[in-house]
Length: 508
Image (tube, rainbow, N blue to C red; front, side, top):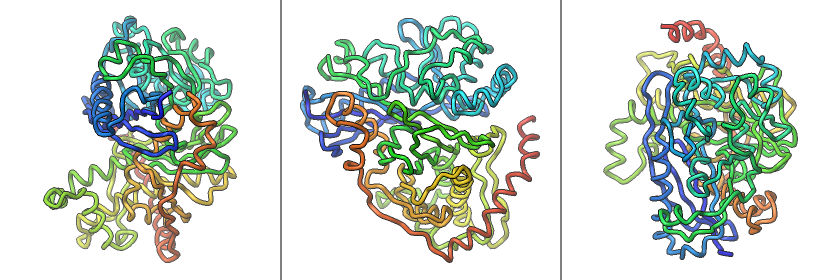
């Protein structure tokens, strides 16, 4: 057996290929981006063939960077964006673009599921409320609006599962990814025949479900030639990005919690039981290991909101950053740091793509409230950071209301590179923030650990307690806590008051 683990993380902006050794050390990484398409409001798609090109190119580049001999790779494993819907024919050919997690076109289909089965039944079975963000509504949308595509569909796949098929010729998914479809019986760890039959979707159109830690096939000769790798390498299915991120953050035992801060953002915990919130603000994914769960609250537009601010409010910062080979976000942070906490009572509602937790409202929109002549564009930039933090605080409060004890929160994702944002979160959450040594690669690390367990390099998920390191502990500041405590209720009320306006805008 080889000594190295190759992990692929199929994210929203591109694929990151990473190479780890048997001690969990990151040796090299390679990123290959792909575009996202927004053809209509609430529609978000990608071309799955771009995923395949990204995997091929990032793998080749990784081999060159690392100078590792291909035969030294012991296993290939995956993590990927969740809740997608990719119809493919019997030969694995995509029949249309993949409808990805951020897409919310299936509002009518979600209502159909609600009328046919009931919100409570779906929530108690799948761990999730009914929403157009989940795969079930997207599958039904295709059935209703693209019947020719639906009739030709052999399997509906999730993002990483398409690549696993390309490598192994096997139609498989895992517990964690399946748990984001609205079609999976969470505690029984299998597709819910009751829900699938009620929606008149053949169970044969869904892939086999396996533990995230299982070897599901070997690299075929055909795929090996395209990747410049030897055939026969074991392929571990891995998991959805949330569960892999939890593993990469060291969150695998009861009481552990983390905040992923990327394009979207979520707070999640490890638990030996699902958590069913009476208000359905949070939901529960399956973790990487059988019998382990990941109660979660996810917001749509976190890093995406800051990216919007970069592109529309920070043109000058982008120019300066380019001249000095810096990230525009570093310049934005330096300027936003000069603005006092609370932005002199300027509030941003970060609902650019509607919202999942805690509001579950696809018609919600982004809003700045409280603008005065004193406010500058830098106030707006800081308000975006704080607005994301306030929304995450609502999610945190939903867990606390269920009796969950969260004393500290591990921070991962690209947003975790911002010390300013980390401090803002510590003060809004009123808890220590642990900035992890591995931030953007945490999801890949989790995938690599799953792969290592699958082929016997690592004994169990508990190995993360040795492999995952903390870079910095940020403690909240009492004075800043008091400022955010004053503004937070206004943030919460602002959404409630604007909900009728969002409804009207959505109906135009």
